[in-house]
Length: 312
Image (cartoon, rainbow, N blue to C red):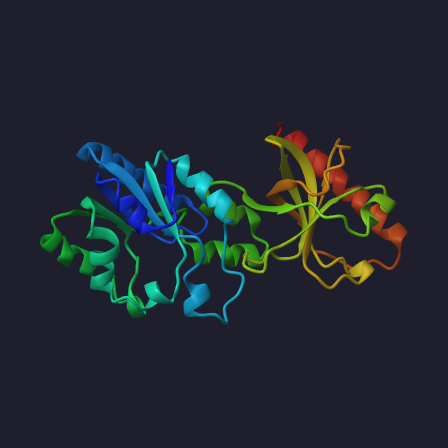
């Protein structure tokens, strides 16, 4: 998959293409279905498949008071799209220029100009252009002018719930990790560079890998989660605390992961943590001994969970 950070770069290829448009935050089952359907349609038409998306979330600009919107880091977004067999990825920043571009001009300038576009694919609720005036109906109207085929994916539902990024955010904020996983089609993952903290876990007998959550990422309800941690391409069973460590009066939200049967020094390296199941809420304990006893019980529960459900 070739990646472009400017629409002008891809126009220089002079190829017949099909373009699928979307924010694709989370790359959930609905997004995956849309991109897979688009790739298959491009193969049917004998053209190259293009994903046109953003490196940030448009609502970070249109509604700056909203925070913690992103469900997926850019690096994972690229990986997930590549796995779907896409030929080209146009990954650009949603900025003031794009936000103020009229919808019809957006199609002409960013999609049609310089490219031989045979297919445009979108989700049923896709909006674009100034004041989000562009929609599938406008794309259908313009298809007659520009001569492309339009593919619109209808809502995808799982067990009666419509798959959407907003529904996944709601589940994560309520600690409903299994419900979020059902709509994502995979465990929810967070990644970060391991930093050297106060080493409180080590003092308690449970050394943890610690990293802060980006302020741009969706907030997860604080608590203790059964997890899997990926390090250098290998997954390990783990137990993860998302929260503020109230027993030690921590004020910043962080993730601490205790990797079972693991004793490597990994400060400064990248980890990805997949949240698999929720054990309990975060709690304040009156003594370190009381905290250790609860952690002992949490680790035992995690080991039992993996013995029963998820052997690696």
